[in-house]
Each structure stands twice: as C-alpha cells, then as structure tokens.
Image 1: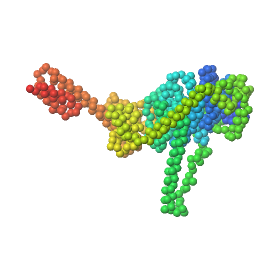
Image 2: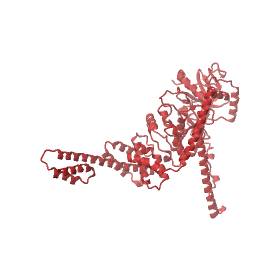
Image 3: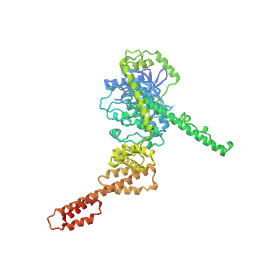
Image 4: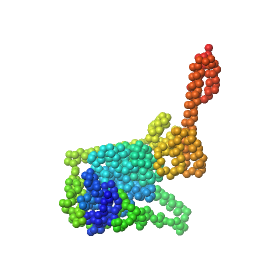
Length: 635
C-alpha cells in the first residue's frame, strides 16, 4: 500500500516526493516561516507498527543527533505526524557520488584525494561518538555545488558494542563496497568503514569497484576470496603513495588496514601537502628553464604566446552557472509529472543562507527541550511546536546534541580505563608507523624477494605466486640489473597469464574491460579447453589469424599475447596426453612379450623395441626395462 502524501509535516509544507526507501519516504519540504528548504524522512505506516523498525528509525535519529560535522548531513528537527515519527535534515543542492561516476566514470586523483580527506574526517567524527556507518558507498555521499562531500543515510549504522543491532551471521550493507568481514556476517568495526573508503577511492579513480560480479552472491564471493587488480595497474598516473594507502585500506585482514579514521585522515593530509609541494617544485623548475630560454632567444616584444594568467583555473571553472545541469529531478510543486521519483539515497538540496542560519539559531533558542534519556519523547505531551494538522515538531538545539553525546557515558572508572586504552592504541600506532618507516626505508636483500618467488614457480603453486605479485613488481623496480631478472620477468608473465585466465574462467561480467569481442571468444575457448582441446586449438588459431599484430591496440595486444601462451599450453598438454597413450600401449606390448608362453624370440623382440624407441623421451622407462631383460636373457 502506497503511503498517502501529507500536505504538511510539522511546520513544513511538502513540495514533492524525493524517494521511497526501506524505512520510509523522503520529501522535499519548505518551512512555512523561514522558507528553509529541507528533506523530511517519514517512517512508513506499515513499519511503524513493528517495534523493531520503530527502534531502528529512532536509532537513526539518535545517530544523526550526535553528529555535527561539515561533511555530515545535519539533523534539523524531529516530530510526528498522526503518530508517525519523522525528522528533517538539511537539503543538499547537488548529486550524489554514484550519479557523478555514472556521468563521468572516472575522477582525477587530485579531486579524489580531497574527497577522501573529507570522508575520513566525517568518519573520525562518527567513530569518536561510537557510530559505525556500515553502508559507506558513493550513493550515500552527496556532492555540494562547492564540490565538497556530505555523508548521509545512517539507517543501518550501529553503536560500538551494540550486538543487538544485527543478528550474528547475517549480512547487511551494499555488496560492491562491503568489507570481507561484513560479507561473512561478522561484526563490523571502524576499520570496516575504512575498507569502504578505500573501495570508494578505487572506484572513483579506476571507474569500477574493486570486486564485481553478475549477482550479489558472486560479488560477495569475490570480496571474500577474489584478487583485485592493483590501482597502479589501471591508473598509472595516480601517485604511488596514494595507491599504497588504497591497497592498505582494501586489505582483507582488518589488522593490516590503518588503525583509525584519524590516522587515515592525517596520512591523506600529509600526502596532499607533499604532492602539492612536489608539483610546485616541478613547476618552479620548468618556469626557471622557460625564463632562461626566453632571455636567451627572444626579447619581450617578440613573445606571442598566451600568458599563464589567461588560462582559466579549475577554481574558476568550478563556479560555472551550469553546475546544476546534471540534476535528476527539477524542483517544482508536488505532484508535477516527471520521469519518476529519485531514490531516498539520492536526495538533493541546498545549504542554508546566512540569514536562514540566524533564523535557525533564534528558533533553537526559543524552542524548549524535547529529548530525555537519549530517546525520542512522546510528542503528544512534548513542549514542541504543535499544529492543528495532526503534527508536533521540535527543532534540535546544541543542548540536545550535547545531552545526546553525554547521557550514556560510562562511570569514571570505565571512562578512565577506556582513555588508557586509547592512549595505548595511539602509542602502538606511533610505534607501528616508526617500524613501518624503518622497514620500508631499509635496504631490501634481493635474495629475500627472489627465494619465495622461485619456490612458488618451481612448485607450480599458482595461488602463492599471485600473492607474491607485489614482491615480483618490487624486485623488477629495485633490481633491474640483477642476473636473475629474466626469471623474475617470467614469474611476472605467469602472474599476468593466471589473472587473465581466472578472469575468463568466471562468468561474463558485461565486457567491462572494453574488449568484448576478443574476451568473449577467449572465454568460450577457455571453457571448452578441458573437454575439447583439439577444437580449442583450432579456435585459437582462427583468433590469432583474425587479429594481426600490426592492427592491435595495446589492450588487444595483451589479450592476444594471452591467446598465444594459451595455445602453447594446450599444445603441451596435447603432446603430454599423446605420450601417455603411446607409453601405455608400448607397456602393454612389452608385458605380452615377457609373459607369453608361445614360442616367441624374446631376444629379437626386445632388441627391436630398444632400437625402435630408444630415442623417444616418453619411452625411456620401457626401453630401460627391455635392456635389463635382454641382459638377463644373454648367456
């Protein structure tokens, strides 16, 4: 049953439907007095009858009440309408990051770095108050006209230690950006949100999530057991230190991720400062060279090139009046026909003006307290704003936020214990940073890198070889002149081959590599190779003939190199199978010669076997037996 649209919700006049989510309905509304635009979330009538969903809706409000941060959507007020609870929040005039990626696919790493700092800062605020988001994804990150991030939708967040928030063993969140422990149904931790941050950075810069699939179970399987392509391989222009941090955030083991959002934010800030300084020095060096060339070869009157000041900067372009051109649904009166409602996770809006902010402050001072004991009060007796439309409403004040942050603090003994735990964690993190600095700055023995790689190659341990990909790359970068570099390059080729082979062995994923025709043909060949190797070899020959090397792009060349290697592999397997058949036949014939009771000249037959098959590698064992038996027959 579709919930009827109210004309008013508390002091707000409903303008239009923004979307329907799992918990309720979201509307755009305008305050009748201040004309402030807000987004109002009203719980659905069906769920309001269920105590469990009432508690979850209330927990969402309590979560937002605790958080006041420039990168988190702000809670404005709470109320009820005909006994249905609702809350209002700031209205962001922009699109969410999911929509942004659909439009542009990839975003420059410099912009992603700025966003990552803002997200980490928002997560620090959230984690400081014991709140884990658990569903951090591009659709829950709004972009303001100023290109800053606003985190929203705490519908499935939970407080640290609240084991009743989710049934143990159940999975909750969004598969593409879900950490492995959450995919397994384990309890989420602050590091779970940090994994999602890494996945978002990866998706923004590469144009796809780290792990993909055709279905949720397939994605969850890949998240838990799959191997993702390193960001540095997909987007080489991203600085090495940024790629390294993203890899750490995406670690399957929680302990290998950064310890806290605070440490992550500081690393990102330090990284941005260092990269900007590096770029500034580069520009200064180029400017010095240009000045020298100009002073030597040209006078100032001869210069006809455009000066750097004439080129518009990114900052200038960001103020373009077309910043709202990508909006999904234009504002208008509620009920206006359009292409369909936007999902609740795609709410759009705008920040308040200074005047409205002053009006809001005055209203907060005039509003009486409405929250007691950290939970929603009964608005039938609440001292908030009552109306004749069946609604009551109270705006959130800073006192309310302070009370929500402190009402459930532990006793001093527990608080002191927790404080000491935090100090120990910080000390441990500093020690770990110092250890990591020492470890990565010390000279690496090439033998330590080489030994496990060659062991995996010798033993044919494909899984171990894939795990050593980073060490293989490290060896190639550090020791290009080492005498063993050819063996390391063979290992790197084997890793690339295995990754392509495993990709083709999975079900089709929409040709996301951009080479649909070649990939589709190779996928079919790989699947048939186990049951019909001869037919697969013929198909490979046809593929190699259809795509001459001189006409291939770089990506196509990579797949055709794989096809050539697969052709050699299948030839080798076919030869080995043929040798096994011939060996079995000869072994049976040898047994008949030795075991027969007929009057057969064994000596002549054995000499014939030795002479006929003595040079065949596959017949060495039979020839040796024949020679030994012939020796026994000699007088």
